[in-house]
Image (cartoon, rainbow, N blue to C red; front, top):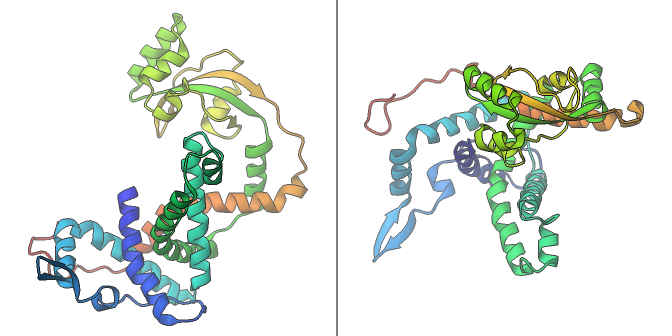
Length: 319
């Protein structure tokens, strides 16, 4: 998935950022796909006095990763065409703001994995110099900038299609502030494996140790299977509220596999005012739905497009 994202960013760099640069000003724009000459000099590099052309670079890229590059290019083009059809554009200022936001989020997340609160906290602790932090920020911003243009166009289009009703907002309130359950889980590949593991637990085996040894979810396994608190309305949350603290569930099946959960604590809901939080909750649920539905929205947009492969571009019969 990350590889596809990188390819979309690379294609987006040429298709969106290059076009916006030519448009000038800060008016919303949906640029056309550029020609090779618009995004690279005629000579890319000189090796021992021999020039290597941009055409050679493009040909090599096609030979090495034709299918993925073409897939990314098609995705960018169908989004671009849909934006043109609906009159939706992005500005250079929006792209810069989004790239800076994504950069800061990524840097802070990386710092938190190292035990700091943020990148600034890492610098304050002397774990990273000011110069190193600035260089890393510039590197990531350059990476996120082309992706930001594609992401913003996609998000603006999706927002036009997305309907967030009062029931969705209420469900988000319940998810964030309603009763929750602290649980440990073990995720297994088959029902047989899960039932065998349940027998071991009923015979006195340690849940946390089995989670570390057996669970397919390696992130929670490192914490002995413990998950973030699960709300009512989620598969594991609903199963937890049918149990008492200390009890272990029967085998539960989800799209992720076969689960066993142990209830650690049932946490009562918070006393919060729904009306005061309504708009914040609406923004939260909108952001979550945009994130969750994006791959399906892109797939549907492509399915509505007429995509006809031309003559094979690599000399090998298309798959």
